[in-house]
Length: 443
Image (cartoon, rainbow, N blue to C red; front, side, top):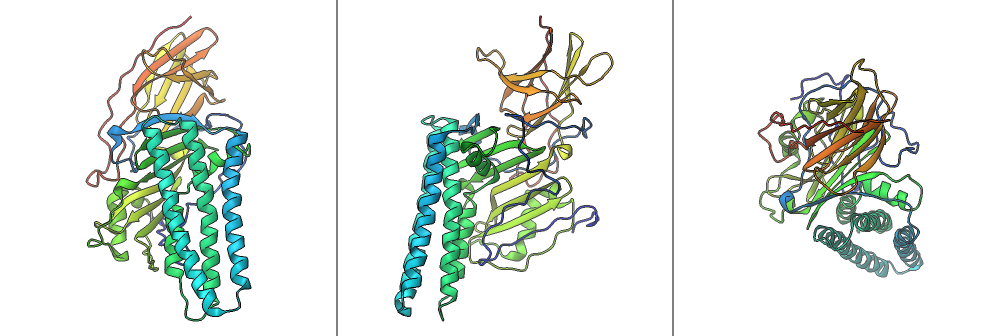
């Protein structure tokens, strides 16, 4: 089915067994774990990018017309860090206490009942944690909480989900030592459900609250039961999405493992065409299949609801900035400066380049981004690097990119493009984008 050489680009689909639980995509080879010195974004040293339309499918929220989209930053916050740590400690303590009680039981029948009772309680807590997440998303969408408050609550959900997965593993291990008791199907389903409440952007937010990571600029879009989080870290664009509206309770149209490749092909045609697809061999008891694709420049983890003939409801994507496909640059020239902006979709990577208008040499200058005709102060992003390039996240709707060097000032007004949605299964590329530009002088 795939046409390109596996030696050049490989794609691997992982189906997580009920014993193994969920999987998060591993960082691409060569990704540094060093702390990013920039408080808001990363820059790229390669100024040359393919000027083609966005061709990578992304999951978007079902009811995005009613969505709330803002930028936020998780930064060092003592009270929030203590709150997240408290969630981790309390859950870990419950797991250790339960394990000690089970180990102390001598009666095999009582231990069996205790394991099953603890597993039922764990499944209830998982449902409660999902309700906590949904309440936070609803509160953000309605304006009851700020984006920073939402990030704190999602960091708590992420942290507790991580601890609860350990609880599930402990119960499974205990049951394995008991003859005739097999809970692997239930614990595997629990771990996989908990995995959908975890993610790399949430993890970074949790670390930033405690000061372990520098603050980063995070794009946040929410609906009552969905969230998009994206950021740039160490030269890699990271996107995680959950859309509860795309999950089905219908069991009549459940897909089989053999149908999973077709679902992935429909949702991510370009990514799947970049390498060799290997059919999975495992079968899991959950209503979720997990597909993972690794290709040159990035990786994808997609969570597919098996009901209603298969539907992607959760994804995690990582794309190296030097492999990002952007629209053709929109340029503005004034006061000896040329500003070039390569846009993508709202929440996607945005490339900004500043050069000398006469020589084309890279220029290091300050860059800000704001809204047209707004009285609000534009958000300062940072300075272009030695190659004149700066990467950040694309806002929604119209926005203005501004750059200043000394007394020279140039700006461009532009729209975000429409993404290639995983629901648009009949498309292979985006339609050509429409540009709205405005360049101006400044003192």
